[in-house]
Figure 1 (cartoon, helix red, strand yellow):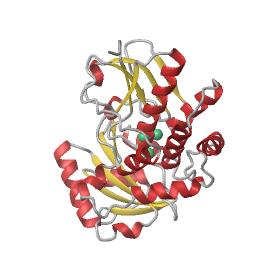
Figure 2 (cartoon, rainbow, N blue to C red):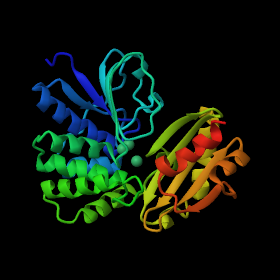
Figure 3 (tube, rainbow, N blue to C red):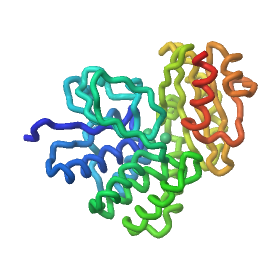
Figure 4 (tube, rainbow, N blue to C red):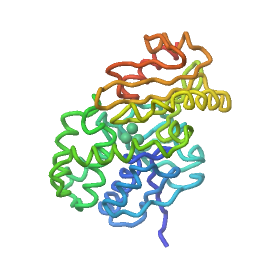
Length: 311
Ligand code: MG
Ligand code: MG
Ligand code: MG
């Protein structure tokens, strides 16, 4: 029996960085503290590229934690409770380790580490290097995969020089000569949406943000071919409307991001389209607008919304 078990857990729904961060940070903490009390956990079911990467680098899928109430918890890859596992408000929070904007409040002093790198796994990789902790080939491969997905194969503006060095170092440790090829392999798995239902496409990477005007949900799918969605737009727009009405959103958006052309088609549903247009600085026609050069939800979309919707 593990005493005082501590769950390390990413956001809901989990993405590869969330899962790889939970796994790699648990290994790190257990090694440093010579214990086995740190355990990776999931806030929900994993997506396809996460399943693919876990298999490729031979990791077991961590267990799903249904409710964090009364548990010891470390949050990775997010710091907003609106993105957390159920019961987080009643959990005993020990640490936060993240690379997103900070929207966090807690009644006690805790370790809170945020660094604006391309992925949480970059922060953790740096900790391994700084403390000279051995990284296995497989773990290096898993962390590398997470960074490649989060930074869209090092293309996003969130990918810093430090991230690029970490990518090279992890690739070397993992024995991977061509990390761009690994990145493309991951995105091929990620964007094979044909088999998914519209609502699954929307929810595959979906985040809630609370602004003064209300709750806004933003989903994003990064693809190497926008054409894959040409037949699905109407259906996706209908689902966005349904989701907005059912869950009381101010607006719900799905960003279909073409990582080769470096732009995003925004599919939108809003109770105040004029306000949304103002936030985006563009006219929305039949629920959609293409914005060239916009590929990062975090760096390019959320800040615009914070400005427009917190007035
Ligand atoms: Mg994430
Ligand atoms: Mg991340
Ligand atoms: Mg992401």
